[in-house]
Image (cartoon, rainbow, N blue to C red; front, side, top):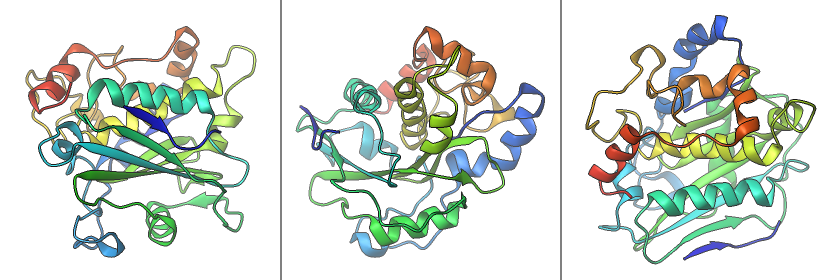
Length: 266
């Protein structure tokens, strides 16, 4: 069962000429920027402060957690579209074994934040510690997804980051600025692509929490797939790839699907 409770690794806009340098500079922000205190913080006994990929099997299987809540918060003016969230719902429902349901729990009101031009990973973590309300409990695993204004500090074309084992941020203002125009994809398409890509990182792709069944990691670009048609391919985060989204959203290739299924996913 999938429920939307309220109506309503790192994707970048960069030329290919600088994509590799940017990838190396920000590899941690995409899928390995999980430094921070252990012990669960304000979230109780489950440790939500580990690196992306550390909770991969908890996400993929029903062995310990048979339901999932995705808490979704947003800054005023940058609430995600219903269609964009539907893309995420479909993706998670197709890949995770959660027989008791997956709930996207959207905040009823925006975060009360002062306007901010940029966010570092540390600032996003601090924001989460102040505002996150849903944590893992019993047999329900909880994840956190926040839609922000502004830019990722030092990398103004970043669209999203997976910064902890259950935590992701999307820079919605950057999506709004680069969608909906002539020869641009829709806002919902890019929202769904960014969210699916970042969830792919916390699900352990690629070689970042679950084992590869066949070697397919693009090691020059961190935890990304070497298939140019895959959702987890590094170039998904460039302006070159955004034009491809006019034809629809990318999906996981067979190698990524094999990895998920071998680890208990679908």
